[in-house]
View: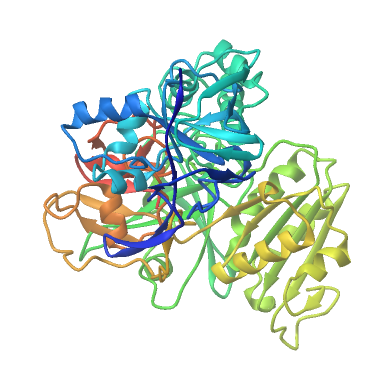
Amino acid sequence: MAHLVSVNVGLPREIAWKGRTIRTGIWKTPVRGRCRVGRLNLEGDGQGDLSGHGGEQRAIFVYQIESYRYWQMQLGRTDFVHGQFGENFTIAGLPDDSVCIGDRYRIGSAVFEVTQPRVTCYRVGIRTNEPKMPALLTSSGRPGFYFRVLSEGEVGVGDQIVQVGEASERMTVAEISALLYSPDHPRDRLERALRIEALSPGWRSSFEALLQSQMAGAGGSGNAGLAPATAASSTAPGFSSLLVAAIDRETVDVLSLSLQHPHREPLPLPLPGQYVVVRLPRADGPPLVRSYSLSGPRSTESYRISVKIEPNGAAGDYLKRVLQTGDVLEVSFPRGGFILQSRERPVVLLSAGIGATPVLAMLHALAATHSARQVFWLHAARDGQHHPFAGEVRRLVLALARGHSFICYSRPAPRDRLGEDFDAPGRLSQSTFKEIGIPHEADVYLCGPARFMADMKQALATFGIVPDRIHVEVFNGGEPLMPGIVNAVPRAPHLPSDARGGGPLISFARSGIAVHWKPSSYGSLLDLAEACDVPVRWSCRTGVCHNCESGLISGAVAYDPLPLDMPADGNLLICCSQPIRDVVIDL
């Protein structure tokens, strides 16, 4: 009969890893005697990264002694100890291909319910001294599973594991894990999984995303249940040659470029909020690669990009001093997941400075369809001379039946008219949201400088806007995800210390960094990005979780190890890829 072999606990500790400090609770030590089971964990236990581990749905992690034996044979190891895989319960019996999500068990005086398979991350690779272990656990069908605590109590080594209930919809831990992580996502099985009441919310949302993608007819490649929002709406890699049809000065430091096909052929229709990547030639070095949001109305005839000319900026200097009407630029297809959602909820377009560009495209789209939604345009600028698109926005807001506008100038000039050019001096804040009546159920689209973005996210959260309704676009780099890393000091992207080389040229478009690949120095494109302090997202580092999925703007890569499920066409997984030729990445 199934029984407890070992009960393991451990509090988070900090360890050194690749020159960084990680806070992790994956080191577990067997308990002597009986152990108290609480609602969220065992007595004496803790999790270092509560975003990925712990909580009610992941209170107790369970792994089987039979899987220990399997890995000992596969890896030729004899040094494993109980708790080696970070589990709280080392058990005999209950294999992953037999236990179903929603099954309930009594162990000692406590009662548990199976909620989800384990989501593997890089820390299990550290603990087992096998970096590929996250991928091996998932691909083998032996991930282990989590318990939710239904009744608190005590447990101890030798306690029998007695089944006291089972889910009405029978899908095993191994089936559920494969349904998400493998390339095969049959609709009928997704629907079955979503009928399991005990399935944890995180897994449920992933299966809902996969099902919605299929119902929308998206089909094709990629895993909608895993890909982050930053990798959504992927498109084919490559650049097209577009003609600069017009150059317009919007303010003292903002230029707009209108781009057309040289033979007036139709362009791909962008989604409101998307951007293009532009490659600018240089006589004394590799091309400059920059990302610019589309700022005009949706069109297949022309694209408009609007660029802030930064002092001493190489790209801005080229656009201001060299580029002329009639020149040809290399431009990518429109891409990006920061797009206006087709919902009926109120919408808030919140920006500062040149961050107005993607939300301006959204405002154009709302005005073009005569949207009946409440639309709030909130913008912060220094003064009238640094306030682009002011007249354009007024016309668009007036075209909306329920349009509202509120403009703040942080340092209004004497010629700026209160009540006409701007609505209030100072900065946008939580009190502004209350003053103008922002609905708490609104969808917010936010773009601007980093400090502004951080302040606004905090103000919106305090005001009561739930996080999943706050959509953000980050121009320079992105919002990193480095689970468990502590005391990391943010640094601006830069060339690595060993930048010289003759391998493929790797361009990080959002960060403005281009460096040659050196296979002797880097195992993956993620390693190179980290050496350049390019903001990155990752968790497993072995091609499982897709947190690192990013846009492949041009070029081609090879994979080692091969991902369990390939990214969408036009995307790549940087954690396990190496360049075949020059590549441009949306990072």
